[in-house]
Image 1 (cartoon, rainbow, N blue to C red):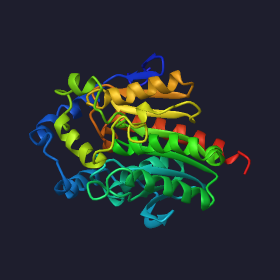
Image 2: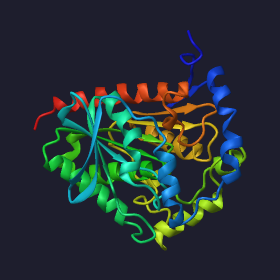
Image 3: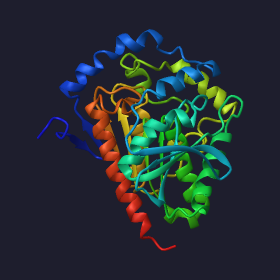
Image 4: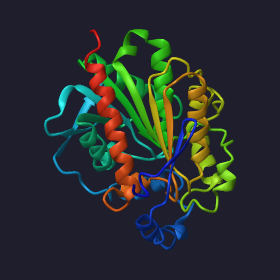
Length: 322
C-alpha cells in the first residue's frame, strides 16, 4: 500500500499523509510566495489573482465557451462525451472580491473531466461594488436556470469563498425549494470559508504555516463583502445554518492553511445533523493546492476522489423521477 493510500479515519475526517514527492515540491513554496503573503488586498488585486489562477494546466479533452444561465453570465467547461442532463455548478473563489469565471476554466475543467459532466462557472457579482447578498442571489439564479434548462442532476461545487456560496446555496435551495431537492444530488467544497466571524482556531495555529493569508487581510475582504451585514447569519456563514436534510457533501482542505478549521467544523456539524459528510485533510498542503494538478500527488489524488464522488452522485440523480 502506498503512502497515498495509507490514511487514518476519525469520524467524518480522513487524514492523508504528506508524501515524499510532495514534500520536495512544497519545499519550494515559501521562497516563492511568502514575500507577498497578505499583500493581495482590494479590487487592485483582481488581475493578479486571476493570473495566479490561470496557471493551472489546461485539461485535455475539455471545451470552453462563454454562456449565460438564469440570467447570469459565465463560462462552460464541457468534457468531450459528457451527458447534457448532468451538470456541475461551480462557484469560484476569490474572497467575494476577486475572481473571473474565465480564469477558473482550467481548474474547473479538470473537475468536469473527472466527473464526465459539463460545469458552469457563473460570473457572480463581486464586492465591494455588489456586497452581500448579490453573489448569493446570482448563485441561486444560476441553479434555478440549470434546472429550468433541463438538468436532471446538479452537483454544486466551490472553492474558498465559492465554497461558502456553494454551502449556503445548498442549505437555502433545500429549505426554500423542496421541489428541486431531487435535482441537487451533492456538493464538493475545497477549503471553504464557512465562518465569516473568523472564529476557527486554525486562524491562529496555522498562521505561520499558511504562506498566503493573513487574518487582517481576510477581515478586510469580508467587511467589504458583508457591508455591515451580520457574519453569523446562516446565509453568510453556512457553518451556522441548519444542516439537516442536506445531500452528501465532501470537503477537501490542506493541513497547512488557516481555513482548516472552517472545513473540519462544518464537516463535524453536518455529520452530527445526519448528513453524509466527509472531510479530507491533506497534510502539508496549502490553500489552493488542487490547482497544482500534475505536480502534486495530493492534488491528483484529491481530484480523482472528487471525480469518483461526482460521477456516482450525478449518475444517481439521472434515475430519479422527473
